[in-house]
Image (cartoon, rainbow, N blue to C red; front, side, top):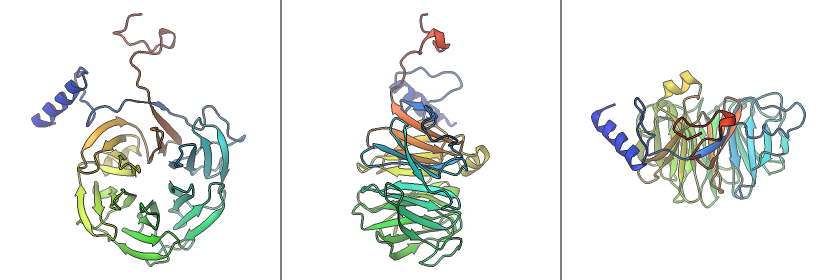
Length: 335
């Protein structure tokens, strides 16, 4: 760490009113003070007998923050499992429908959209699991207006007249559609220059219609106008797995220092970060494994993890240990 960065880190820690332990440095932008439920949906276990998560690729909440949708790859449960915010099982669907579950978003009308990077498709369901729209040809990879090559994520324009797909593992492009599914345009190719991609893994749109793309293997986020015109890039946030922008333009990401760390640790070394949308500045951070992030309207944060977990982060930082009987009394706290 350079002298300048070290001074900045120590200053940040001082502002938080916290001592700096030897050998440790504060979180970027300061520590985000949340508690976590590390087995949301499985503790308490209210799922049907035999249900168990495999790798969880995505998680999403509805606009009212009353339902949590989990997209998972295991064979011991339906691919899409729905819970209330207490973790109680509500319903599930999708068995036999997907090649490899990847991305999931819920639109403001409560429809559930997913990307299947195994079957090269994008699908839209209503909240009960009725299939409303399918884009892409099942099992056929391509780069024309009617096909995808392992799509990763999708995002909705603020007026809900268009949506965008990051077509991401096989292709290196972003595709724009009308909300009815009619192709409009696409941009991008494989490379390292502005406007080029090496695994566009996630996509999000702010209230002004600007498009943010996680160019993961290039360790950067690129920002475009609504028709793919390059605006700027941020190369200080690492290999971003997933981006979420709230209706109030609050930006959250789950990221790693770089793409090699991400691959080596299989997403285990991740960090959640709150980002200033105008500048890309980190406003706060905390550790979490993760592949997908959703910032619910009730202030909670959900992470879909390839470890087979859904993490529910909620405000409630502990100011003291939970008690000597649990072995969690800090050494500096009177017993």
